[in-house]
Image (cartoon, rainbow, N blue to C red; front, side):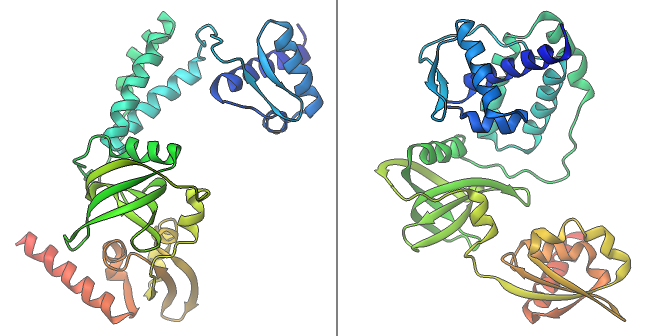
Length: 317
């Protein structure tokens, strides 16, 4: 079998996998994914149909498998099996408990369809992979909070949450969830708050109760990255004078804290930020290199740093 037919076989098999995993697959998307012409995709789909695969749809409108059609179990490659093991380790250390529990049951189903040799591979290699997490994981009292949020997004129904703010005030909010994201070692929900008539983010571990209602919402909110990039949260301008020798150590993390620009001066690098994390995240990040930095503005940040260092000193006595 020559190289052309091997590539076609791999591509047709991959298209079948795409049809199994998605409700509808467009020829344009398949052509872009496999870097071939749309006409080639049409021929590949015809090959699947000739093999007896019941594909619904036509050129230009997208393809899907006939509802109820069952395919034999998928055979995973060794590389795919190893990626499952690595992903499982990451989920165990960095996921919210509600996600981790569901992922574990999903992995059990995956393991059940593996070949005997692949099961042996997992048994031999899984103890050789570990993820060391140096941050304390927030507990989160509600077991199914993130799945409930994701269900409400899929069903486009409002949520009612009982939420404890950073100053321990408890409020009840009706929200329309846009998505969830993980940042600064915490899970957050980005949502439209009907009380504030604006978008807000809520830390998942501060949600005391959550209820998925039957109240629908029709607004199309788009992708969560749009709101992370153009957040409406209140921002504070911060200016720091940082010694040059430490710049290389914060070059990757600075963008998470609202970095805007930097200017080289005789005394160091003057860095400017617009941050939404002035109360918690920014001072705790700054304290990791505070002995190499001077706060130029605002004065309130100096006060927060002073209180934070006093608190740390008190714990060390």
